[in-house]
Length: 513
Image (cartoon, rainbow, N blue to C red; front, side, top):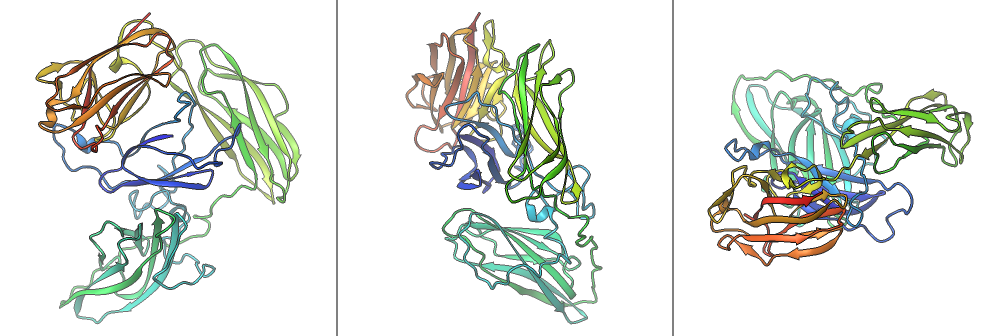
């Protein structure tokens, strides 16, 4: 699988497949190889990606890098690029209707512990296992630590307190630090250099109880675990200053109750749909063995405007016993006319179990793919997918720095600007016969950059250029792509890293009919 991310600086992302750790990767476009036996054939496979974003670039200039996206920016399944991937994103609890308005939208993210209130004062952690620091934890992912610090600092002085984490820099982990529910610090053990983090009085209570929570992210399976954590006196001075305590809500069990389902729901849909066509759709609701039966089960669909569905079997059941399931089927018809590139189909199960009921949903994304039927600039085509090695997504009719595409002093008004390693996938539906472009390293990088350019047709390499450098003449690509359903434009880094590898596909066109 190819995953492209823009995380900024020391940002990373960690990948799991069906709950099995795959690896942790740095910013950029990465080919992720799944462990043998981890994929489930002829079944849904769940890919989970935990992303650490390190903020936006602080350079609001002509290149607009400060506007670059953060998070995952491109994904595709290598070998089956037409497979549709349905993504869900988990953010702060409440989403737009934020649960903790006092601390604001930047205070917590999508970690389970954040959404469950583990960062907050008064969270009941007595059932958690006691531990001492330092610890060794070889499980990749997020572990949580909580403690209480009771302070009684002398009156008449202003004392600055800091939290210090000390550990072997070879251990690869990072930590989010919360004090009395407030996110104050982001620690990266194997990067540093900061190990001491000031805790401002007002958020820290110098004369009372303080709740400290640390979310530890182990990024590999060999070196994790939290180092020693201490409170340090960063300095005291005589002062009558006594900051007022910053208030924020504590833990409330009803507010932060986490929904759990003792059932499963899976929607099955095709990868693609065309206007005015009908296709089968199914939703399966099941209760695992050993769980309490579900009653009053009803399955329904939510479709985009203009879509219709006709049930072809039962959609309700009085009871679904443990180890059993209810599968509902429909014939779904897409409307005539132009469909958007992506349409979202949702199934909802309502049911009662163990005396309580709540809705349960599953979602699938369906693509509408159309190929060009006339000669077209590549920059004017909808991309099936794209990845870029630096500074946000690939650029349309601009260089990677959002300037005029320029090769060896010649400007070009159309094309695609990228930074290796990068790729652009085009769905052509066998309508096209040739691809043409002028390629090279954009003049904007000066005496830097080394790039290769490759064109793949349905996975077959049609052409690959030699390494082109900043002082190389631009190269013309003119290749036969007759009958190709999918064409991919790939820029490689020349084998020496991707710094300044601004790869231009200038005047890129497909010849189609």
